[in-house]
Image (tube, rainbow, N blue to C red; front, side, top):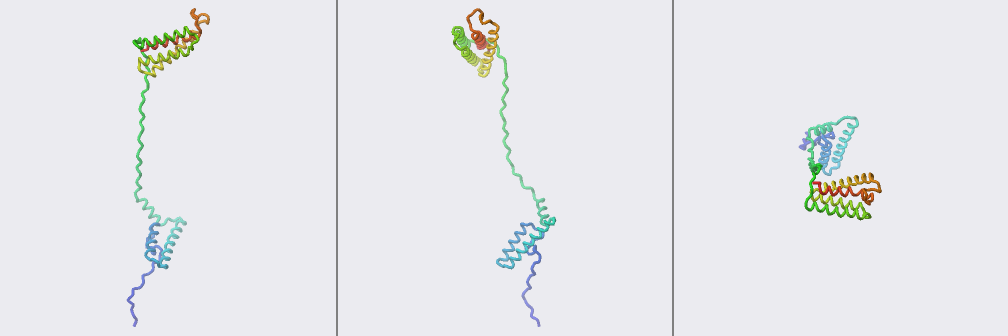
Length: 225
């Protein structure tokens, strides 16, 4: 008469590496690694069980490496590709737009010819007095530098035009233009007259050349309105 044992038979040991780790054949690498760590925690310090888990993990890696070498795409790779296609694209970081720099519009200066109007008050006596002194120095003191006299006359014209129009740049422009025109007229006059007969007056060619510029600057200061 046989005796029956009440103890249950031990469970069969899983045969495949995936079964030992408790993952599917299409599991990703991260899932396989997580399953390995979970199985190691379950067996604790059991050396034999730990070695079987490590062997199953190595077998899975070797199998997938062979599939790659043979040019086959593993089921895990297909699953990962499908997950990437189904996964929504990562949100794009919103980059704040740079503010647009708006440069102020500069209006082009409008050039207009001034009219002719005789100055009055301070704008009348100031150029007359200044030009009278400069003219006396030019005629009575030939040794005095003529270019310095013309510089004073130009400054007088600029100051007077600034007083009349309140436009400094325009005053400087007209003063320079009058000086250049007067010097040009003086050069023409000097070339037309002989050195011995400048209208019968004992004037040097430099004095003759400076006279038109001095008078033209006076007229401009008095009449440009």
